[in-house]
Image (cartoon, rainbow, N blue to C red):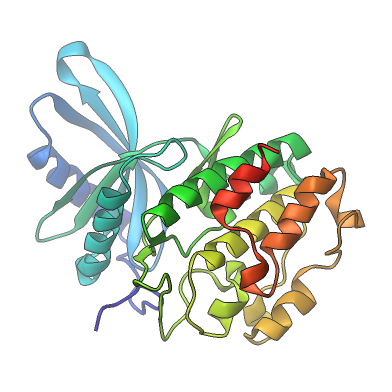
Length: 297
């Protein structure tokens, strides 16, 4: 059976120093003669299968330093690492998706190297400021996310983990990161799983109900992200109430109506668009491409 990464019981080894050492040794052995590892720096994130660090490299001849992100995936989950690599190779490059640079493995770890696209994710930004994004900034984040998802979906790839922690902010731009849970869609445009992937708080009703799902699920998650960016309303976690889609809409949105108090000064057209993304009926949701096109009207 192919593991889809929805449930992992093993936690990545907690000895961060050992992981850094293993990553530095592996990369030093495999990078070409033009590059050298300066430092495997601060930890950015840790999950059940991986640890993510800043990586500083040097172009030797020109003494030019640049920063990447390195993801160390435990050997127990090599299959997940290889699927993530396959996703990156299929989708190629896109302006709003962190660029994939390479994959290395040895007897201690699997390592993926990606571009560093910014220093703060959307959740950290909202938590630090304690207030919603400016409406114009929310609009720009929405366009960036929609463009990124349209690119993924056009390659029959489903991200499955769209959440503020996976949206990195750099100025007015936003980047979708972490393809660790991304999967390839079946020929009928759906994916079937016996478990719930990612973070329950950001999942669509059809995933909560464990039904087959497709690109509509990513659009729903994008709607939740934009609702949070526009309102900074703390969402109710379905796990605290018992997981079901009935609880989903009944408890997540204290002011879920266009023009409600929680929307602040968000433009009416964006409120309406988010409301459509969050339709319980997945067929009522726009596609990512339609979201992009709505910005041109």
